[in-house]
Image 1 (tube, helix red, strand yellow):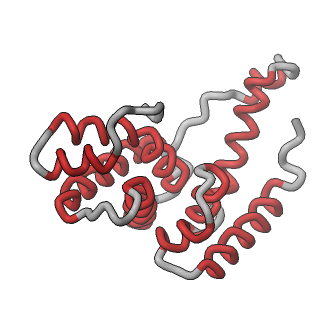
Image 2 (cartoon, one colour):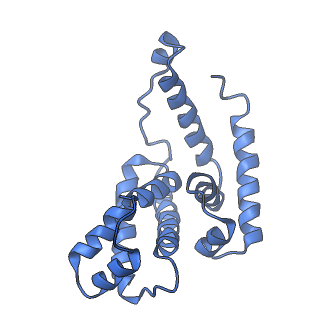
Amino acid sequence: MNRQDPVSDEALIEAAQKGDRNAAAWLYNRHVDRVHRICYRIVLDPSQVQDCVQEVWLKVFRKLGRFRCDRSFAAWLNSVTANTAIDYYRKWIRHANHIKGYEIHTEVAAIDENPGDRQLDNALVQRRIREALETISVNQRTAFVLRYYEDMPIAEIAQTLGCTKGAVRTHIRRSLLALRAKLTGKIDV
């Protein structure tokens, strides 16, 4: 629902803080897709993403009463989302035997049969990018996701991660170098 809604986030927050469930639902619907994207790209396992998204929204609605509109709601939500996804990933990875628990719906045989099919080629590229993302640290992955998938400015990423802009630039640089090294020679489409 990221279209030009007539009601601002600030107005919805004020109403939600006063107990208006419809306002809270509007906030949720307006921002849920972005929360899902960020969680998916940090957690990397589709079977775990929905739980992570729910955890984000539980935190958001529990803390909404203390939210002050001197900061953008979207920036605050991005911060809660990224930090929750990082914590969720770390907790989940400790209990998982391995990360490669997601299923890949594109079979190599299908790609060989249809070499010109762009959708299958794109699926292969996306799968390899996800696999490469698995190999970098969660802080590097988060900085990369927020910068290149969510188009977030460096200063906002620094605020989200609770570090300096220089540290964010370092995370991004290292993530790019690691991804380039992992993907070099792998993508031959």
